[in-house]
Image (cartoon, rainbow, N blue to C red; front, side, top):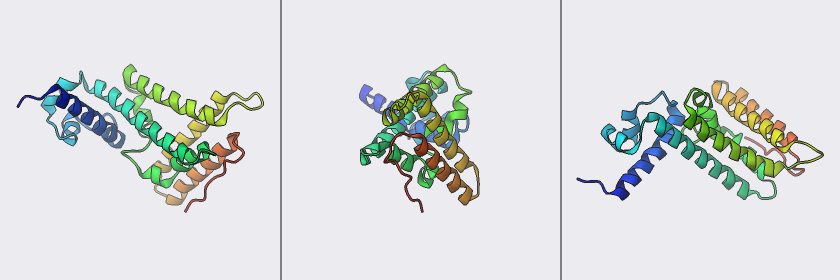
Length: 201
């Protein structure tokens, strides 16, 4: 049966959505085209009608994953407009987020993999990371001559590193301590007087 242009585009978007999650779970090289397409309910033969290569899909999926992550940041910030950074830190540096291997932050899940990919994947990550930094810069602002961009970079590095380390250990208490230490450090670096660490269970 002939596939309409609309159906073909819907199929393409489904593959990108599925790949954005499966790559985060398995890594770019940890899953093949057959399993990626099966996850989208399609055959491997349909892949080359939609994408130039697996690298092309990796770039598209990376962009989609970062867009999804940024949307979650925005939702968290809107839940507490008086202290948006504290709300994002509370969400990001949580055990729940650490457990989200397929839907969590792509910078944590795929950052080391992205460093070994081509320029298109790196460009997708660079764009997403710049958006992260832009949001954090807006929430912290400049104070007393501080470099807001540098402050945002330090905070983002702390947050990403904490989630990565928290996921890397078996000891649940150590995992929680990484997150709590990062929470305290990031909020201490911010200029938001009302940003306080939330209580964790």
